[in-house]
Amino acid sequence: MLTELAIRDFAIVDHLELELGGGMTAITGETGAGKSILLGALGLCLGERADAGSVRHGAERADLSARFDIAALPAAREWLAGRELPEDDCLLRRVVTRGGRSKAWINGQPATVADLKALGGHLIEIHGQHAHQALLGEETHLRLLDDFAGHDEAVAALGETFRKWREAKRRLKRLAEDGDELRARRQLLRYQVEELDQLALADDELTGLETEQEELAHAEERLREAQFAATCCDGEEGGALPLLQQAVNHLSALPGSDRGALAEALTMLGDACIQVEEAGRELNHFAAGVELDPERLAWVEERLGEVHRIARKHHVSPEELTELHQRLAAELAELEDGGDDLEALAAEVDALEARWREQAEAVSATRRAAAARFGTAVQDQLAFLAMGKARFEVEVSEREAPAPEGLDRVRFLISANPGQPARPLAKVASGGELSRVSLAIQVVAAQHSTIPSLVFDEVDVGVSGATAEIVGQLLRRLGGNGQVMTVTHLPQVAAQAHQHLHIAKQAEDDTTLTRMALLDEAGRVGELARMLGGMTLTDQTLAHAREMLDASQRARH
Image (cartoon, rainbow, N blue to C red; front, side):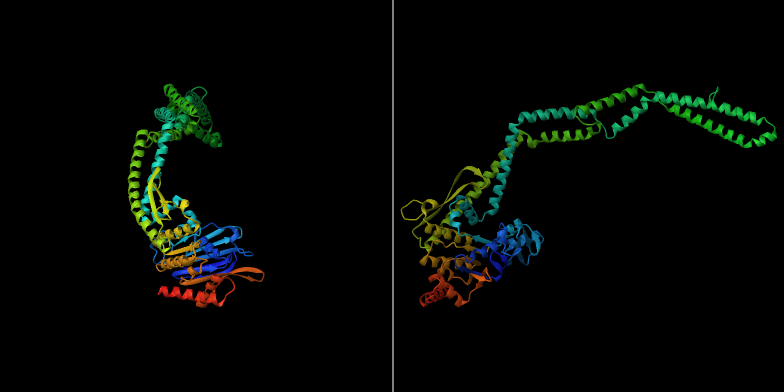
């Protein structure tokens, strides 16, 4: 339940810290005093939309926080545990800047507004003052009945099956409408992939082919030049080696004294002979390795020509053919996958429809059973609210078309007077009657809620007198099982509360501020008297207020 609410620089509140307990808490104050501020602050902590106008004039930001005791809320603890957040506490905090930006935290860790909403759904339930207007919509009727039936998991599974069925139908329709185009695309892909399969271009093959073509195309020239160079080295006529050897021989024939003077030259000529002889052998070896293979050259050039032709055909470079082959093959495999086959997809659609109908029928059965119990429970509350002659019914009929919610259309019907047929709420109930019907429905819904903290924002609009006292008793009864906070303008309701929170506006230093305080018994008597008789308190209104408070306390005991 909500244990603390802290507000700083929000609307016309500069600073406020409230400690709240279980039972029923009445929230009262003059019109315009700011009762809605309390709920607005709580709503922001629970993820409602923020705007810059919520920041108090002159302040830079509004800072709001709400602390909850979640010892008895396993769903909330599980939500926190799933996000690795502490489970022994639950503190929601929201900061809104003057520029309209906001930040959120859960247990001190940054969070999104969506996180606040998701966790808030496990913590507290707010019934607004316009709930009776929402009751005129059949969507609300269906939601309330499902909440009462307690088959959330079955309804969620039903919706998921419907979404899968709808998507499969869309795919089937698209496949049928685009059948000719897809078949043409599939045929083209088959031809292109088959052509690339036949080309069978291996990784790095293109580089090897280009290198080999370069070598084969210039083989004759390489052989000719190598042989010429070898002849220059060791040719019998005019070759460098014979001439060097002749020079060595002539110098060697000189007298000894001359040979000594030319020793260095003889050595150099000898080394040159060795070098030229070695060069000649290398050149001859190279020439012997040059292969003249016109047939291989023709094949390589033909292979390269085929690669370039197919690359031009697909408007890619030869280097991109391998990647293109993989991409086209993957697209073809996807189109030929059984999931996109008309017959297989049609079978999937039929199977999903059958599953949806089976689930929808099971949900419908629990709805119809719950509808009778819900109708009886609301009927009992209406009798308690002085509408004992009214007849409330929950009509479950078949929808015209399938929907995520299933086969059912749910309508709340009422007959306000005996002998009249039950008709939709909007066509029968007056304003006062609709308020009481709304309250009866909300009380029944709240009794079956797994959330122990409930907020009622002026749900007693349109009732008065003895009925107002009964409304207070209903809310007090709900508070006995958890925590109920109700914003009310009726003293008969406020008198039933276990705690009474008063809200008032005060002018301080040319600034209007809202003050909130939990009232003691004397303060409660004074506030009840104000609610009964206005700003002027008389002995009579004070006595009436005291009697009203005493009567409610006796009833509680």
